Image 1 (cartoon, helix red, strand yellow):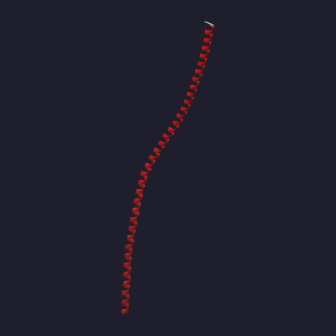
Image 2 (image 1 turned 180 degrees about the vertical axis):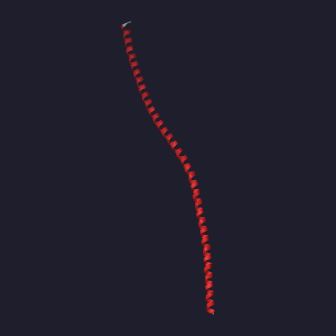
Image 3 (image 1 turned 60 degrees about the vertical axis):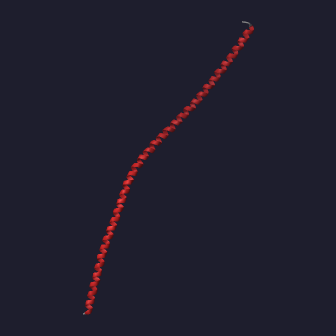
Length: 129
């Protein structure tokens, strides 16, 4: 090889070594960026997993509350029906007591009227003698 060819060969070797180093550096940077983005995506995935687990727990809790509310609604309906029945019984008893009071009052009034009539007859009978 001639000295000129040797120089050209050395220059090409230097240039190729530089380009190889540059390509390796570019590859390292790309891999580092990829790894960083991958870590961010994993972090986002874990965060989303937590959000999903929380949502699942909330859904289970809300479903359990719904079941309890339905049970309470059934109990409330039964109790409301009992209250309505008791109120009706109270009204019936008040009506019954009122009727008995009125009948006793009428009997008492009739008795008083009869006593007064008897008194008037007795007094008018004693005055005529």
